[in-house]
Length: 114
Image 1 (cartoon, helix red, strand yellow):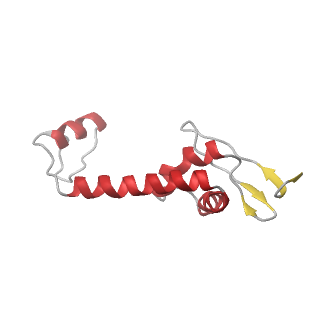
Image 2 (image 1 turned 45 degrees about the vertical axis):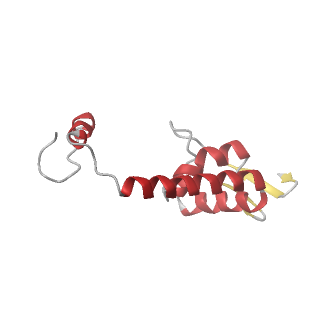
C-alpha cells in the first residue's frame, strides 16, 4: 500500500502492556506507525528489551522525528542520573526482604525469601 514514505505493511500487534510484538516495514526500512507508539516503547527500548527489528524501527523513527528524539534524549539522561544517584545509596534495612516477599523471589541468592 503506497504512503508518503513508500509502501507500508503494518502487522503490529500489542501485548497487554501496549508493547508492540510484531513489525511494520516500509521501502526505506522498519517503521514505527506514530509518535505515541514510539514514546510508549522508549523505556523498553532503552532497557534493550525489544527485538532487533523493533529497535531498528524505533531508531528509524527517531532519525526523522525531532520531537521523539528530544523525548528519547530526556529519558536516556534521566535513566543515567537515577542510576548514578541510586548506585551510591545503601538500601534501607529490611527493604530487600519486603521486596522479596512481595514478589515471592529470592533476589539476593541467600536461599530465603524475606
